[in-house]
Length: 412
Image 1 (cartoon, helix red, strand yellow):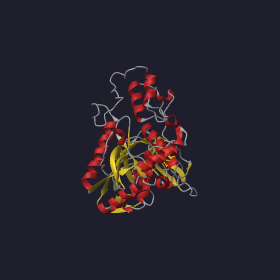
Image 2 (image 1 turned 90 degrees about the horizontal axis):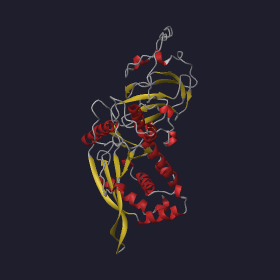
Image 3 (image 1 turned 30 degrees about the vertical axis):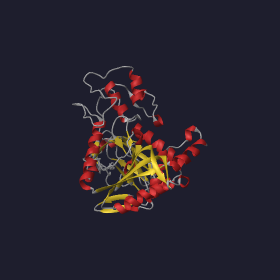
Image 4 (image 1 turned 45 degrees about the vertical axis):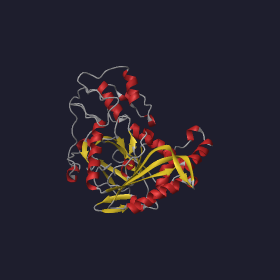
């Protein structure tokens, strides 16, 4: 079970997307895992052949539990593939994950199988976590619905439309359609937003307890950036126009090339810089809570591609359809609360990262430049960084580099 963030301790295997004997390549999706935050598509990071699946769908196991056995493509199988039902799992001890010996007879089927109750959350259906819970409460079979979410995923609105005013079955704990991110789960029920809030609280408490934060703030004149963006968008179809967020992401990425002390992870008592620049984007989820999946190689992508990938990432995050690499690869995080009217945001570092950049709202302010006073669009820019990996001098140079990049938007 992969670790999909510092706040993850366990995960539930929802479904396998491979079978014993299947050949897989690096980057293939092999499983779907449910965490406190979302349903995550788990990628594989090497080529090979699936030899055995060691955890059954529906099982909740700790991070680090062996899920499957893989062999190199040219290697001969050490033993025949064993049906999943015959594999005894006692996570997380690896020795107990080995399949039974060759001589073990297959488990006979029961003489008669009683009818099984409808399981509206069955793993073969692609649906957001909130849609699954709501369907379970209302007794709706997800397999009968047509999804309107990203990639055809079933979302909350699809379930509500199918319900047609139906109320949860007696004894079921209703799932709130608008969940407060700080609310506690109802007694006897399970609420993902409350579980996510607990996971976030644990990670942030650890961060503030263990990481010596320092904070810096400045303001950036966006006149040049917004003027260039307006002229660029005027030449584009409406569906291809870019948002200021793409400029901010690109400016941060290019500035990180000048401040490598802020791009990487603090692991085992030392800073490990990252050559790749993967920026985690803080995204508020509609059902409550927060998630920060990564945009990969932001410094190497042109602005139009970056804008497309940002739109896709936000849509998939809110539909509960992220990949494991997007939750584990971020080397720094960016949070932007400007659309909510916040002028300044000082973030809390998400371990094992060593920095988080914050942007506030753009507002018109008096601004003196070249001896002239005028009114210009200005944004608040902040940095929270780990004093073990960098210091205020390096952090200040990083913020200055972001400012410099935004004054020359045509080079972004």
